[in-house]
Length: 343
Length: 220
Ligand SMILES: Nc1ncnc2c1ncn2[C@@H]1O[C@H](COP(=O)(O)OP(=O)(O)OP(=O)(O)O)[C@@H](O)[C@H]1O
Ligand SMILES: [Mg+2]
Image (cartoon, each protein chain N blue to C red):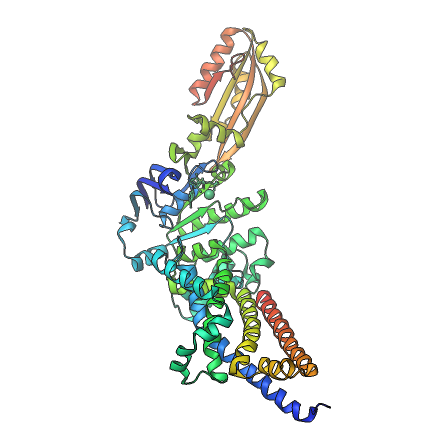
């Protein structure tokens, strides 16, 4: 669907030269929601803008549905861009046009007949839940509503790809969730492939299937969201995961860890997916002669799959605890002892 | 000696008519030249939709040169060219040529400034939609800048009223001519005052009208 091969992007020249992208290779599959996360200045905007050639890469290939879009003539590129919708952090709506006028714009550029435009815009506004706002101007709308207009406009030409450049970064958490829900619905209803860049890990957690971590113009980690959250490898990925899944052990519990002995041992347990639906801890408490005490943890949902990260205190004889741990291993649950001062 | 006001009023009306026609025609022609100049100055700059360093540099330099010639010198220097175009260098029609040479680059700059205020993000959205450069200019740049363009043209018109008074003084007729020949050269202070008052009124009315129109467009 979207393939980037060894994309490099350089701004400026001479001594002021900045290499914003250093050989980026990625492959977004059809119908996928692919996230790129990175800190400010990592090159996220540069990357997404290379996909529709708003920025021209210094070298490398951009393939959209197998078409090398850098080889296209200007008029062919414009046709191609109509199949790639884009939404922006600052919405980029025309302030001189109504909601209707904004959503109709891509269709007007295409010289579609008025009746068709009317029908399509109405349909789109209904889809994004703004059918009653057609006559309003952007300045009369909230941020979330503006982004919905942006989404409706991006969908007007029935694109097969939607690019989201920090689409929710200007919105409050609640509005962010509703816009993300809308994006999910777009994928479900139209099967659109979505590439989104963000610095907010909760956005990745809430809707992405796969994620790439961008650092200083390089992709340092690429994984399914579930795998990245359960087992981030690079420090930067760990930091990002930590922004939404706080797995740091609170100071109050640190003392317990330092006091553990052979009858009193603390483990970190990471559940993914189905494992969370079994009453694992209560089963253990019944099956083995150990007391189980959850000290700390979070349970959240990743792509509709529950995901938990718990710090648990097992009290019992060394043998019983060993047996319990062995049982947990058998359940496909990741478990590891938390050692004093090793967190 | 008492001043004959009854003979003066028709003269004043005639002068006002001349000023109005001088200003409207020179506004029309200088806008026809100046608006495309402003658009070209914006779209050919680095990183814009039709970036072309050569065109931009050349046009920019020409505008700067024209803009730096004082109007009173331009008025005289352009006489041969005026003769070529209008056939004469005296009269209201002849005054329009130096006025356009003065106002077109000025309008070009004003339009350029207005268009530069348009949010870059909007242009980017237009490009991402697959709009042609022409569509970007007509459907995005100009509509988004319209209310500021109206203000720019108001300023240019007022500038033209001032310049037309000067052009009138060297043979173009109009209110400026009247104020100078009677008021200044014949020491009829009353005439000067009445004429100036009329010019002030022109400017006030225009500015108010421009402000209202611009606000209306913004609200739309
Ligand atoms: N037009 C430009 N000219 C020069 N340098 C640029 C330009 N655009 C981006 N850069 C540089 O390229 C690097 C990557 O910028 P980019 O905007 O892609 O980062 P980002 O990850 O989107 O950051 P942010 O989260 O702040 O938007 C930065 O060092 C930036 O300064
Ligand atoms: Mg950015």
